[in-house]
Image (cartoon, rainbow, N blue to C red; front, side):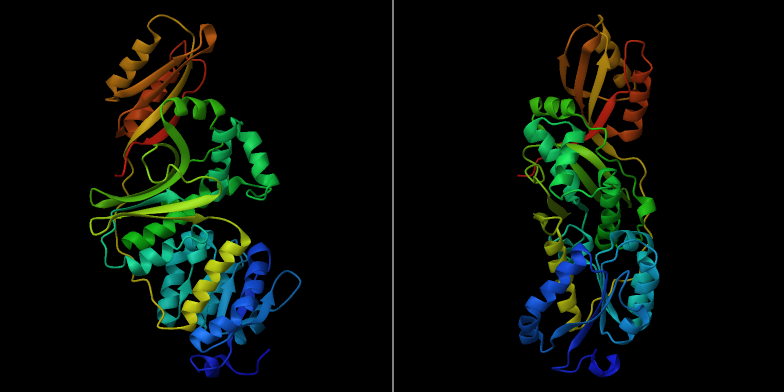
Length: 419
């Protein structure tokens, strides 16, 4: 380890830029290798050569020693404890920090942003959202002067791979998940991905950047894809729709709404063609209309590349800071179009009664498909946009009908087409 103190090395042309690495799993290992490969090129561009000054993992390293001998800490351990303590201590000690930890930022971000600002150091987190897609940098820097109205996208590669496999092969959810695990696109325990929690944490971070409001994971309602069936995707194909897990953050009526949910898209939507493990983020603003960024959303080398980009930014100050959060109310009830799948006994007047219940709640049917006979009949409908509370109330009423054989399945539909 270099004997130069952090205070002496910081900002000195030609001095090594010392990086303490917390975690050396898939991402940490890929970052360690990538830093070694790119160190000379970075030194040529910035005047300082980055080097690993210490590694902390289960059987190696001491955090206090690594902190004392570093200019910057890279945190790729994941989780909240002890990473929250490590990151906060590093910032308070005047060290730059780069992290890929979306759960940490979505739950404790405000405290960490404030600590970085107080110490005048950089907190980089490009790798926390959408893998190699530079969504954080574009919103934070390129669009800093734009009044962003909405950010939405596909920010979880695991679920996008699963839904793509179901659409391409006709496989059920369990079969597609098993294939994703076999190929390394899904963890052995995929709960955070498939329930939408991972995407919700990322959307909380994007909402903070886009709107300046303090948004935490607790402010983001989320639904996952565990209950999606092969039938849902097959019927939707007949209606010209494809299914994606969508994260959305938008301004509504003087407040903001941030949500994650499965949604059907028509073919003209810019996110409809994003397939496999790719991620994509669409940003809308009156100043720019709409831009979509797309690329690989998962993988050790891709995430390591985003981490290294933040390290290079820290080597070449000034470091940008997030301004203090502003107060914007969270809008709890948002209008959306919906897909509805109802399993019914095939009796006269069934469709008419279902339509009547929907009409009583102000829900208008856009299209309908009827399939099956006897006790295996199905109604598959797409609704025009309506407040979600009214649609859910209608679904509850439909479920109580005598001839409805199972809880109706409802999925959001995004009916926008961008020209």
